[in-house]
Length: 252
Image (cartoon, rainbow, N blue to C red; front, side, top):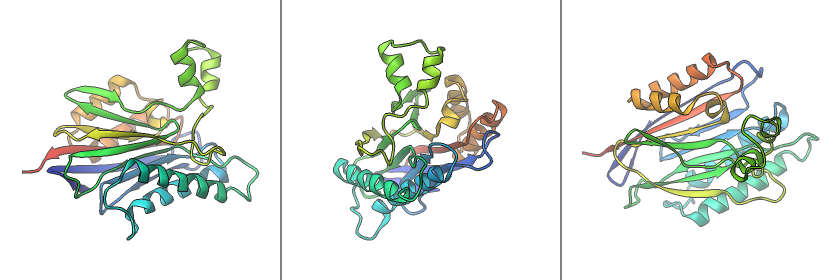
């Protein structure tokens, strides 16, 4: 997949594996063929609510920026409005279910005609966005979990039973009854940058060093995705794992 944004060529690839924990894959992804847009969702749990939430969230968010009436330039207001529509749609999708219907939502969106070489990250939940620049891998998002808050504020230690239990307590997610706003991050696109959007099946199973090594060593996004997903299976395949890799190049 290739896109153009303000003198930058973006090449992208995506993939997903089920792993060994679940019989089905409750991750959902969208990699748009026409414009710089990718969306990743990770359902909460392993039932119908999880499957419906992920599919609904990805389809509704993607439609907000691919429909004929969509604004050609994503703005923070438009990104928040799209996320609000996701909340409403996910909650409607779960009205006939007794189980929780919710999912994470992590997206990258840019405008082909934007004069600035930049894109937007939208984040709800604990799927993540990373950026590799000049050999340094930065985590661009935070996890919307009680575990993240607890470690930040010193409520418990990383290896404690409290931290492990809090890892699965999301403070924000798509379909939340309070409809929390997403984090919205503007990201400059420098030649040589590599962006990674992934579910926790990647982030929890692969170390910082492994992520850095794979993204640095594989210039082709499709190769990087394959190596990342294979590494999650080698690490135990303890969860569904989904990855999107985007490489930024200077347009000649």
